[in-house]
Amino acid sequence: MVLRAPAHQQAPSSPGACPRTPTLLRRCLDALKSVQPRIRASYPRNIEDRCDVGDMVLTMLLDGCFILHRLLKYARIARREAAASAPAAARGRNDEEEEEDDDWTQVFGRCWVWSFITCDLLLLENQIPFFVVQKLFEQLRTDPDETSDVLVAGALRLFRSLRPQMLHSSRIACRDVHHLLHLFYLSVGKLAAAPGVPRQHIELPSELPQWVPCAKELEEAGVKFRARQGATSFLDVEFHGGVLEIPTLQLYDYSEPLLRNLIAFEQTYPFTPGHVTAYAIFMDCLVSSPEDMRLLQLSGVLVNQMNGARNRDAAGFFGRLCHEAHLAADRNYLAGVITGVNKYQRARWPRWRAALVRNYFSNPWVVTSLAAAVLLLVLTMLQSFFAVYGTVNGREILN
Image (cartoon, rainbow, N blue to C red; front, top):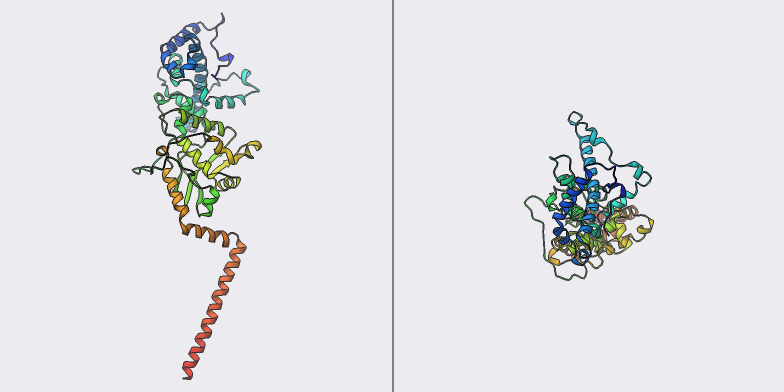
């Protein structure tokens, strides 16, 4: 499937069209023809051999102009939001930027369609090379000082509502982006390490029957779950002192296809680190039943916002994501976490302590009864002690 531009956004060809249109159209077509070999190299041969040069260039023109329109619009929105948060003295008004560029006669009554289009822009089969959008931007921009980095800013603003977690991603260079899904992947896949401290990486066996036990078993072994605060990515999982810290992940109806496409991208692109795949398999091990899902929801790790039909099968969310996904052990960034969790789970003292808390400190009535029993035992021991002490002391006086 290839995205098509709406009819009102296609290049006009009527006699009353703008006189500049034929010139701009020819420049855009020539620019895309110049990179036609790169475009063909970006797709499987069995697909692109069925298209001649003219059809392929025209398809890239229509799809590229549609994507460019959306990115530039949201780049302007991002600038307006940044200006609104700036001090009033430093904030200027630009009437041209304040102008809304949507034709509301076209979109009124169906604004909800744009949310579906935004999700479709991140489907792996809908991707077009990002250099196509850059080429069109170079031909159509009106401000010569505006760089192509504005496309990245627009894309991050466009996909902000779809992010699994609000992130503080580092700067992404436009030249490093292959397509929109890759750009989104770069924005959600950044892992922060402490300054001067490399992330722990331990090589694991190539085949693991189970990475970690489920959440219920880990809780019985004394492992505590906590929503990690201040994480730069939802992938940034840590384990220390018996506490498994996982950044909060909000699950919506679109989260499953979104994460599945990120995993598909990792599975098909050879130079990705595979972090999303490792995270999905790790969470699939933790969530094997509705009880495991409930534990992670109570701890704030997972926030389920899915509708009723999907919510009933929420426990299988991660299992569906990583179905038939493969990950080499030497690419598993969670190797250190897995080793630490398993080692802690096999230790005896944490398990005994967890059993003590579960059996004797599970509710206030049990705690009250236990405290009363301990107090009674202490008083009985004191009474016995003073009775024996008084008897012995009395005999010494008589003697």
